[in-house]
Amino acid sequence: MTDQYVATMDLGSNSFHMVIARYHGDGLRIVDRLKQRVRLADGLDDGNRLSEDAMARGLDCLRLFGERLNGFHATRVRVAGTYTLREAVNAQEFVRRGQQVLGFPIDIVSGNEEARLIYHGVAHTQQTQGQVLVIDIGGGSTELVIGQDFDCRQVSSRSMGCVSFTRKYFADGVLSEARFQQAIEAAEYQLVPILGRYLALGWDQVLGSSGTIKTLLEMCTAATGEPVINLTGLKHIKQRLVQAGHIDQVDMAGLSEDRKPLIAAGLSILLGIYHSFNLDRMGFSDGALREGLLYSVFGRAKHHDIQLNTLQALAGEYDIDRQQADRVQDTARQLFVQVCDNWRLNANSGDLLGHAARLHEIGLHINFTGVHRHSAYIVGNTDLPGFTQEQQKALAALVRFHRKALKLSELEPLNYLPEQQLWRLVRLLRIAVALNRRRQDGVLPPLVLKPAAEDELRLHLPADWCAHNALLLTTLEREQAYQDKAGWKLTLVRA
Image (cartoon, rainbow, N blue to C red; front, side, top):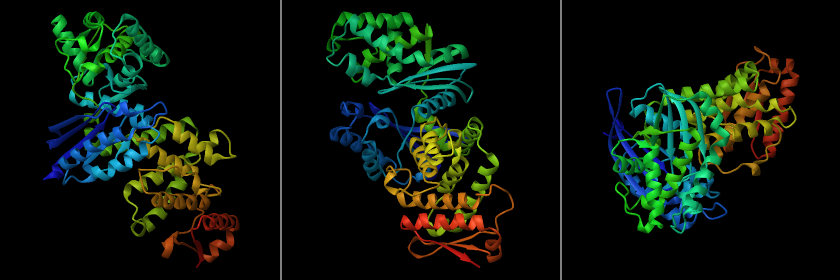
């Protein structure tokens, strides 16, 4: 029964949300929603370390959500962590424990990927007209996207959210004109780097998503009688809040008790956006990150296309030698299929290996010396549409170790795949790179790679080929020494 359903979770800075949908025709029909206020961002200290109390609140929620997902297959569930987990220095500890209690993988998505997913959630659930500016104010960050139909044209995630702005400007609950002015100016300052690009592209429609904007819509509607968020209504709300003087004294139609503590911050951020983008009004969309995640699960093939488009764009931007990338990728795939069953590597690992093969030389854009480190830096610090933060870290790790000495201690912990699997992929990539050192087609013989006991690999090569390819054989022998020093055995069998 559960194979007809998909589920997604949005692990936000203020609340965790879960949506469950059922396949219906060629689309999805939402059948259940769960929400729990966790206040994860409240647990971040000045050093961006997540407190044990905050983690416990989050884990309790995940345990509860996990009960609802009993019987779901992992391919039908996607869980995304957002701003607070991006910022927390101990986020991986929470992810590790969270995966244990939930029973499903947790991805931490980048800010720009979050923005794309939000846009797709809106685009799939809302009638849009022409180019649309979508604004989503969350607990820790605000996402702004311009798109048309299902294509994103500008994406940005800014470090301003209801929780973070409340802590900075309204922590004691005092509401004054000066406090609002500080918060509004801070929001405007955050928008300066992106403003020119957005104004130049323009838009035909403005839509807001998220609980904060929904609350402001209800407050505006109560104040003005119009079912839109207009500047007049927002200014009226601000005036009423200032008149109240303290958040505890606020009593306004449309404002629930659970939204009250964060409303001043949310209003300030939205006013900063209205001032910067010269907005007068906007509509509201129920679609948001969790709906975008739903459609990413439903349309995995399309999601895969986004990843391929990202790789092609990077190849063009950094002038990668595509023929050499193809050679290494083809060789790596040949090696992968021969060991994947024995090594328990799944199709996702094979895709990751192929992506790394395509990008392993991207660091040549800087220079050849230390190309593996340059490649890792570019891959790890570039916006990669379609890739989660953990996938990006794993990809950067693979290209980091594609050549030279294997300094295993330099690997940062990963949640995307076990360390043993990563190192196995590294070994395959390194062999593929070594085999293609001549950078020519038609050089390699049929390749036979066999796993043996204790992680040994045996690469069978024709004796005649070895006799006529001394350079490649020397390169493979050097690679043999590198792997041996790391504690792995690579045996070259001259048949």
